[in-house]
Length: 336
Image: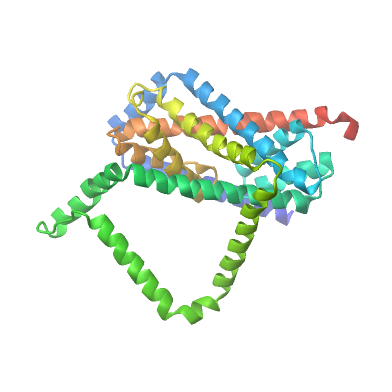
């Protein structure tokens, strides 16, 4: 009983956070802007949303095949449909509670493929490590490739207003680079001064332990039968994520001319929102709206776009996850 209460409270907590971000964003909009958002959602071409959902399913099929490749070196060759169902059940569970998905998908393979939970969970950690490496690479690649556009936006919307408010004579040209260098220098100085205390702290030991486990997961990929195919699936998954965001642009007149560069920015910054708040509820559309301002898309259109992308992802997970729960025992009648 106590466990059920705690689970319910955790779900309500994350829903509450999402609701807060929705209220916070809408609170600062005028009635006219709210009307514009509803109008954008009304005129959207929802056939493109269906295409986005299909691309999402394809990405998770690739994730299924990649996970199977990690399971084979430890002596297990589960049926593809069971792994596919497990992946979607995991994503469905993750909508409710963070990290519940990893436990759920491994539990499915334990139940229907007799794979020990600890072994399958280890492969999931490796998989997450690979995804995190690719995310970090793509994030900084996006920043580097579009640095002029992003820096120009920050200069115009952050530093110039601050300069005008506090000291109009301040020249903020190149201020981002200068502040970044100052931050690096101060951080290195802090680490050097307090190095003994830092190196003996529990947080540092946990971080080192995490990095070692992270590295072992990366190294284990080199032991696969076909590491190049594994790399292909890893890149293909992110390509599908990118296309999933981009095709939603085609659903609205205001975003139809945006390219893959805008899609990559939305994917990168939107992913951060999903990491911060469970499922990205509430915060994901707001982040997309702020990101698309860089590309001169009105905030109302950007917010509607964010809701469409988030809805496509969430609908896919709910439908595919529910269908997977129904089909899993049907496809495994002999094991019941």
